Image 1: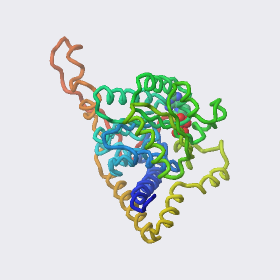
Image 2: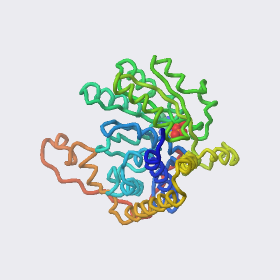
Image 3: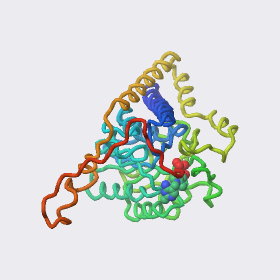
Image 4: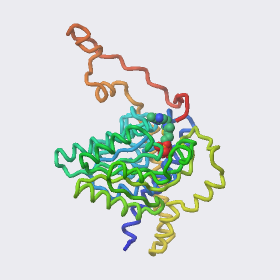
Length: 353
Ligand SMILES: Cc1ncc(C[n+]2csc(CCOP(=O)(O)OP(=O)(O)O)c2C)c(N)n1
């Protein structure tokens, strides 16, 4: 039976994601955040519910729509917002930006921009877990569009073949950028594809955070205790565009409004009221979250920009440039830091993503 103590923290996390994403959208249109920005608004119950079924030792791998997963995993709103702003205090020290959040301590292995490219990485983390007998489960999130990509088949195939402790979660939000599922995919239920690998499957709605948690928990248990992978489709819907550059002309405003009636935050709120939580208690949580997000924005704004030097400490294996092998072994000068963009001069990359 659901208790208020179970639901309240999950509700708070969903509200945090919603308010965080709204604040990020505002900062983006003000030109304070560069690159791309893909919001998770509408899908909060999937990430929050799924991650509530995990242990700290488990691995979490997501796509470019990763902010919600990071917040649900416990990365601070400050570190997430600072990452969007390209600041040194961000969870990837400002080098990753929106699509490439990382947090090694919380075993968040990205944020990946290549559709489906991260599925084999999730299989790899599951392989490592099995090989070292660490008992960790690897959970991988992707959209329905990714189930038509080679990396998806390679990753899930190996997980099935080697009986890896992995959970593959397809967040079916019905559109891949502006293309509806029926124009890209011959099956309506992407978990049907589990048959190709001979693995277990699941399919459920992503509106109710506790139902998501319970559905994912069954797959996590199978992974942890039987070392078997599962492919799950969670049916969800994003209320905003694919990214901030998406005018959303491929669906009607009426369709979006209709779907907002099943907003996961509204559903959780209704459930809390029915469990005896009062309106003022809920309002207090929302006010507390507002303050947390405002604090994250002001932290990001006053933080130092990413440092070019960080690349030499974290991305490349050497802090010398050019490498001594290219200089006949002679020691070389330390690299000059690259120029860093001025605050508010966030450059938009071309194209749509
Ligand atoms: C290999 C690859 N092809 C194309 C793109 C461009 N692209 C970015 S997101 C996206 C749509 C993916 O849709 P889906 O997998 O359903 O996830 P959603 O965005 O709905 O969460 C595409 C085609 C890309 N990033 N990588």
